[in-house]
Image: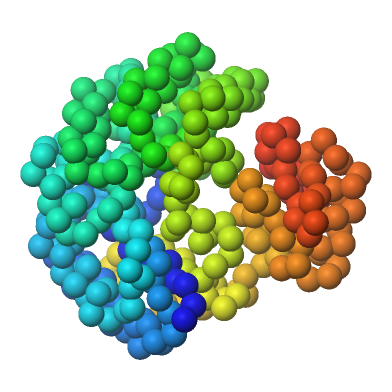
Amino acid sequence: MKALALYIHIPFCRRKCGYCDFYSVCSEKQIPAYCEAVCQSLEYQSGTWAAKHEIRSIYFGGGTPNLLSAKQLSDILGTIRSRFILAKDIESTIEINPEFSHSRAALQELRDLGFNRLSIGIQSLKNSDLRLLGRLHSSRTAISCLKQARKYFDNISTDLIYAIPGQSLASLKSNVNRLLRFTPEHISAYNLSCEEGTPLAGSVAAGRVRLADEETEREQFLFLHEYLQHKGYEHYEISNYARPGFHSRHNSAYWQNQHYLGIGPSAHSMLYNTRYHYSADLKAYLEKPGPFHQSEPALESEKIITALRTSIGLDLKQLKAETSFNVLEYAKNHPDWLLQKDSRIYCTLEGWLMLDSILPDLI
Ligand code: SF4
């Protein structure tokens, strides 16, 4: 029985955040039809993948999964349970936004549905940062959500954004300290990136917002690396920290090149070295939620990129001989950035900082 990670994309948001380029729409009226379509996808895909796989992690991401009612989430989970084989110790995560989930009842409902891991989109605990990012919640709402979440979940991940325009190191440290009072088991920390076509990119182009410079990004990355390790977290992926035993099983499946099945518009799958996807088009998905499109075979370059982002690194045995030789040679010539141990190659801390510049020479 092979392990499978299952991702369900919920492509609805109340309002788009200024920096976000994930696929989602701001109209909620299609949610009921969407939930039915997801169940149809699951039924269709189970015909091919259910028999020989055990689902070891389920991840509801978005978008904003907690715009769905408990009944809608329950219907989707019911279809998963009836169609697939689930591991007894399955990791079952739902992403939530604080503004819809700070009540006790909402969080208890998620726990009762069987989710055992919450991923909360905190991003910052400073109101001016949250306004700049275009988030709907306030610092107070985020704190309230964290407090309530602790009563029902013993596995909580929080998203944090750093290198926000105007954010000082002291402000980031205060943010992190406030977050750490709730002892989240997992922290995903991303530097604010400016994606083409987003309102943030428009504000930057118009000169209304000035992005943090490279030196600030570097300083804040290094601070998080030192400080969170000092507080007992393992820096196990370039943007992810976890207390021992709390690495994200679901995301690790992506990073370690394991099989994953993604359901919903824009969701990607990787099964037996072949990539599949549903188009980022809600209307098209609702019309035809069954089969997905086959993309190109998984590329060696993708394996290298994702593996070098992790602390366990890249297993050269998983690469073609020639690619493996090139990576090994590069590591020998750049020991400050890449280290070799047995058949694995890892990034040093400096290598992580330089990863975007290193990759074109490796792939
Ligand atoms: S960051 Fe999350 S909540 Fe904000 S628009 Fe993107 S998917 Fe929606």
